[in-house]
Length: 521
Image (cartoon, rainbow, N blue to C red; front, side, top):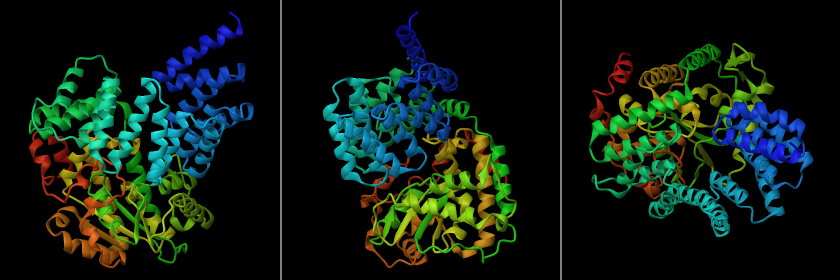
């Protein structure tokens, strides 16, 4: 077999492996093929993207940079460098790579979409929409249209234009009925009123199809939501259980890592001294708590204020801590006072560099990554002028809301198993009690149910805590034009309502494992 035929054959094999998500096999095979055929971009791309899929992004970046040295004008190489740089929180460099690809071919649909995604993450909504619409005008085949419709559907979904979002999402249903991810997206913003619902009927037909585990996961979560809307709780839980079982098997969450991490945090900050602070004039509001505890609603309330910018869930702090002082789940020092000023300062600088990507003029910026509750001690050192709002809610309502939703990030993989979810919740509760013992009233505990029952009083207290004057807009969070990218995106576009309280009780019998763990403490 000559080289051309061999390359074609190996390219076909490696693409099939990549599409089957056999990333470890792609990496092993791809590294050999890169050495053998250094002029073939496909082997660099497949190997690098497989490394990135396994969160080995530093390695992925090195491979793509070696590809760039051999192919400086290859738009696919530049595009993938943009994707990986974005994953590594370097939005500035990511933008440069996407723009470089578009300077070579301004009709390159993939980079138009990826740059649009970057603009959306940085709240540059008009720029994002223009890029998506240009990509749509250039899409000539169904595969390309499906990608752009998805981007446009999620864009309109996040900014609250649900009718427009559904228009694009239903088009994807028509193009590719096996795209169950879009069924999940539709279910978040569609209210199912009876069993004759057209979308519900279309999903039920897919149950008998030979779908992948990933496709079934999305389909079953969507069906669980649909049957909950109809009040058919037994049917709903049947599908939620199937969806969670698939996700739990995929992610294989190990609670022991978090037990170890949380124990280390308590030891690290034992005998904490308030003299340990790194000055910063920047004003941040960190909204923390368990996922699904009301963090999105609180962000919408506070970011409606004229002096506040809502940046959504930022990953800068967590990833910088992991990179600089938390190696393989172990802190590099046993006591916070032993961690060098240089390392702490680097975390602060990397966070500040990350938020520079947001073009905002408001006095405060909100970071509402819920799991930042783990880093409260660091927040008080790195950003002494910041405000911390801790969202609290009925324990079982929080846990059930996690159980019935799927998440895009593996950091929430504790949600897919009742035992793991309950144990993680108890870890969270214990750590928050620890932080409250240290910082007391410097952490504002906002109880979700209290807010629903007395919105104006709690909003006033919240604004007072943040040092903000009264703003009537904060009473109308559903009118806030800020984008929302979480599972709460439909709820926060409606006026505040109380129907979510004690929803878990409809599933009390089925949630006995979770209930016994959460209520034992």
